[in-house]
Image 1: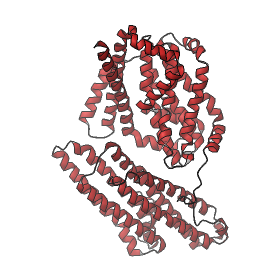
Image 2 (image 1 turned 45 degrees about the vertical axis):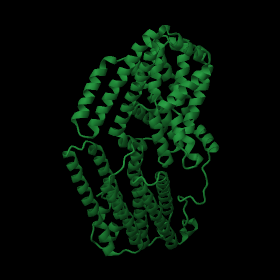
Image 3 (image 1 turned 120 degrees about the vertical axis):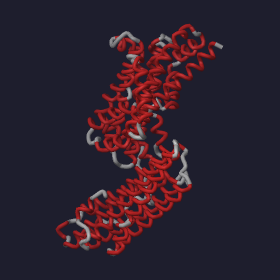
Image 4 (image 1 turned 90 degrees about the vertical axis):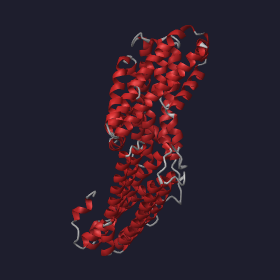
Length: 552
């Protein structure tokens, strides 16, 4: 009976530790997720900056897995190239060790204060950044509390024969210990929680130093597996380069560390005698050494990955230009005509993407989300091809009308691509959240969403028609479509407030979520208006040119 109580207590406190780490991660991501994403996308211009960006982001959200998935997503969208992406992953691996260093000093006395402050912030503020930070404080408090209880729980287990036999078996079979730790980290999605657990075992002498170091290596290996499993769903081997590259650095580091393990005690002993600190120091030193070894050779490593995982060549790839012909540059009228035809292809791709987005938001097709993201990525790549094609056009051979046409094509292409980007980061992000939380819009919201997304697709057709033939009245009608979206959002906001007043607690989060969907849909519509309605109205003198750049 005593063994059963200890086992249940151990499982419960490990679950509390994992939940505390989860609350910290989700709280920071909810409070600063979009900010982190934008900052990360802009801060990877060089290897040192990319490394530092990965380190700082992971130190904040305390999940190298989450950072890895974020960077992998940027790489798949073409926003981050392979070399800085790999450097950022090396930084992320170092960043996840920082919280372990803090926890190695056992600041348990702060747990009640963190929980008190967190609960107060969570209860006294409306949904927003302050409330999300309350989640962070609650998670930190639970994490510290779980760590303290695990330490207390392990004290009477020093002489437990069953646990001792299990750990002795792992100590005599390092590869089994490595595999077990890897599997535990993969299942828990948190190397921080696993390393903290290893620190507790080492602190009470339940795990020898060598076994603890092997388990730490397994934790580092396990956290690199999830990004690999989450990537490559498009069937393109190139999309696996970044996560596979990160896994490769971990595997190489683990192989060398396992070979040098007999000397690890002497090295860690020189840094301190406390066993828990030794585990934290080994975790930090391992990731620093791996980063120091791979950063100088990161370009060569990237080339190897590109050869092993070549980009798939698909003749039916929607991102492949169909009309852009370099030989047509000698005749500007032909070149511009081909660029215009390619720009119109963007509307066809976006129309299909919006249709799939509608099915994903209404939970009608589980595969629609992946297909829509694929099309949005293709739109972004095709827009880059159009821009590059027009940039190589000799301006000296262009007449004034040709210059105006070129600018119109660029304006149209850029805004359509921006609409696809907003749809991908906003609407599809909401659809993904719906699937994860198993939410469902109510009947009234579904009806409104269906009307709204069909309206978007109709406005897209009008934008394409305006691009081909500048009709003044059609441009006015499209510009006034903004009023429909504003009125629909105002109506939904009033309904949301009424539900809150009526005591519908569940309406707080779901109603705010629905309003975010409407705002992002309105943002897509603004891009369609900017693409062709405003340029036509400006041509007729009904709109100042600087209004074309307004976000509305």
